[in-house]
Image (cartoon, rainbow, N blue to C red; front, side, top):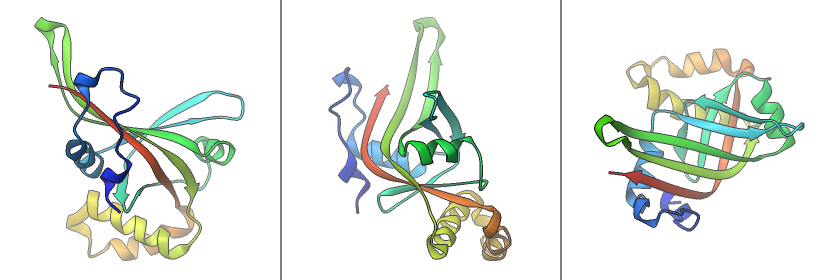
Amino acid sequence: MNINDFYTSEPIRRKDRVLEEQETGNLVETGEYGILSTISSSGQPYGVPLSYVYAEGVLYFHCATEGEKLENIRYEPNVSFVIVGKTEVLEKSFTTKYESVIVFGMASIVEEEEEKINALMLLSKKYCSPAMEVAPLYIRKSLDRTCIVKIKIEKITGKSKK
């Protein structure tokens, strides 16, 4: 599954700011972190920065086995995930150069152990590649106290000002 299968430019008001499909896919694959937005059962919005990894049509992130984001996902699995790439404030022009992506999708808690381990290996490779030889041991030790959430991507939009 290609990440660009989810690309759309429809909801972007400023068509001159649409980030091209290839650039959008590249930012999703290489971004350092994103901000997950959920909603609580009381209607309270909640945004939290997370490290993540993209693989085959889903984003994965890890967290503790309990907490507000998990409660919100159980209540309402529709989420958005914002990834911000390069930015540069242009003080004299009172503007900012930027690139960003918004992912829309359905979040769910991964229950299957093999998928959890695979997601943790992907996260380890992205963020801790020099220590990959010890990653399997570390993952096994912490598996019971680690939750993996996946966001099944439904739509991606990208925007930039260059």
